[in-house]
Length: 340
Image 1: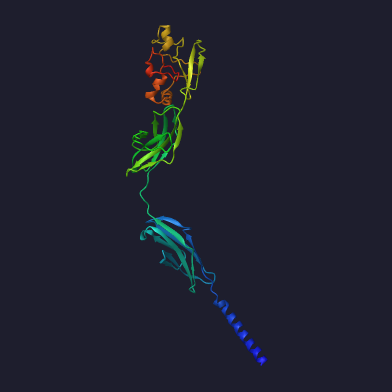
Image 2: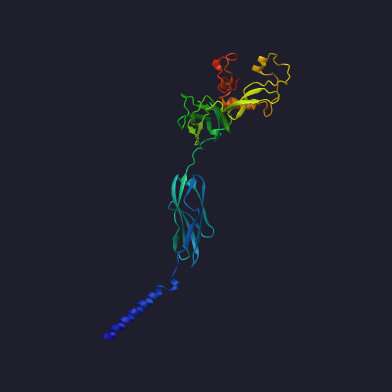
């Protein structure tokens, strides 16, 4: 009886061994194929109406790839059976939204492998938005500043300009009149000469545009500007070594000016004053013989001087002599010591 029991056990173990050996034989093993999406490399945003190109790579170590299936939004949109495994999706066929893209490889024995999902966000491109940029100030005076702007999307705007205040984030305000509108026909590097500012005051500037839908858009840049505080920085005297005459000079902004009219003794002119007092006050007319180190100022020199003092309409008040013999003191303060 005991021999019969152990014989039965031995037969059962043999059957189980043979059964396990058959299940693990090389003939029945089928490795899954490998597949991945190569293009696009990651989640993607794409404009509605654009073509979405999809490229996949697939391989099978113990067989061959039978087909690659392209799924978009859960639907099979293509089947490709040979390299390259590629397909182009027309996004015009879909609504705005986010979709799942994946590919599936099938080998010659029907085994399937899915790729990782790539998210595709289809969006609609709205009308282009014009942009204005603000450039660094090119000039800062006592009562004025010069700043330029550039506009991108010129055909989309009806007005462009610059605005300012003393607190930051300025906006165009009809009541405050704190803005200048460009009068150029093309908004490329518009330069604004902002006048009537307060002396020694901190200002903030931004560019602005008004688009064709009457929306106002401001520049991302905002520049902080401190107007100048001093009419002049230095003053003194020098002697003309040619004839020993002494002159006052004054430095205004970065320019050094003679604060008296030239009266060089050897300068001959048909327009000279005969009277010595007149020559002292007015100099010798038509004399262009400058002392060593000095020169006749150019129009640009004068314009820089006027700009620093607030512009052509303002500067004269600060340049004129305050002697009532020459000018009405109401309109002549000579705060610059220029003594015109």
